[in-house]
Length: 410
Image (tube, rainbow, N blue to C red; front, side, top):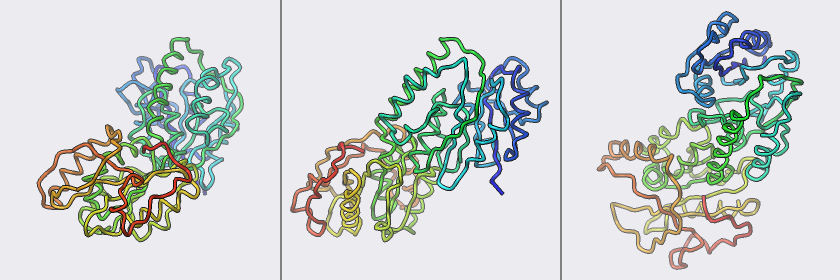
């Protein structure tokens, strides 16, 4: 039996259509519940939705993304189908194709439709060209901007979804960046309410801003971190890692000492990110990038006296990955007992804004777990392995030939 589906319907002043939409969706075999998110309605939307059999919740922050986040949180099931509230005419039988298209490895199914009143200028002129440039693995979709889709919420950090009209695209690219397929099914002819040009202008600005914000995040550049324990990661790279995780990047962290208190703390700090994993270092050679990865960024400790196995394993892994994917190996300035690291010459200061709160929480907790004085979040600096002087490389190998050089960033 297929996993049941929760339907979420963001709605604001949709009293004329909400009853029919709820009624049709409740009749779909895979649907177990319908949740309507009242996003500031001043008409009878809530009453009409309840009368039709929906659960109604209120979201006081206006904006499509805020409503979608609230609906995802309220839903009982991981498989969620998001539907517009302003649908007029649509074929119930065809609409049921969306949850029926679920399959192993598929994380999201878009509903592709035709509307005789809409020639999809936003999709043709903005969304599809942007996807071709930033996420070519999604360029096969005919209706990438469709607001009708089903997805598995357990695959993405849905609490971090954007709060505006770009939320449908955000869900899609997160599923893609997590390594799962995005499929598409034809759901026939659908008629939406007509919107004025100012409404679409506002949507276009929000969607364009979303694509600009994700360009620098390089979501399909997968991260691999190798370190001694959780303390090294929290002190020297947690903000950079969390900054990428909040946008949807996949990160795998391998630790020499995986069962220490600080390593358990790191696992707890990252536990709400489905795209983050913390594993033993001896599993690092089993790593493989996910199907949609376009680069792999590897982080490891800077060489120091008495250093452990993490850097040696990172060099081996990075060289193996370069056979098929571009990427760089970056070094963290790991310190022991406050001792200065001689020779460390950083050539990268990554953006960490969205990861600072997690870093600060980690440092505060680390002070208790590791019985050390609480530290403030300092800028995170990295040095490329290729720039490492030969005298600091004994036992770690020569500079790696860049068969597939990356752009020199995370």
